[in-house]
Amino acid sequence: MGADYEATVLTHLIDMLYVAGILVGLIEMIPRPDHLLIENIAVSPPDHGHGYGRLLMDHAEKQARSFGLSEMKLYTNKKFAKNITLYRRLGYRVEREETIEAGVVVHMSKSL
Image (cartoon, rainbow, N blue to C red):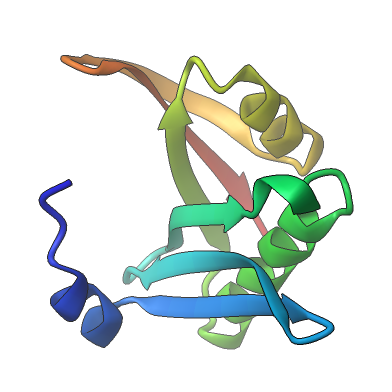
C-alpha cells in the first residue's frame, strides 16, 4: 500500500492485455542481472478461466529470453494455493518459504 507507482512505471516493465478493447489483465516485471522477476500479475475476476494468466506468463518468458535471461522468479502468498498450483504446472518450483507479518511468502523460480 506504500508503493511508489510513479517510480514503478519508470523502472519496471508493465504490459497490459486487452481483449476486444477491454483491459483484462496486466503483468509487472523487473529485469535483474540474472533473472526476470514477476512482481505482479492480475486478471480481472470476470475474465478468470480464459487462459489470460497463462498468456501473460508466456509473455514474461518471451521478455526474459529477449533480454538474454535464462531464469524467471516470482513470489506469492501461500494462501493463494490455486496460483501456486498454476505456477507449478507452468514449470516453476518452490525455492523457499518465508514467514512475514502478513503470512507466508512462497518464492518460486523456473529455468528457461
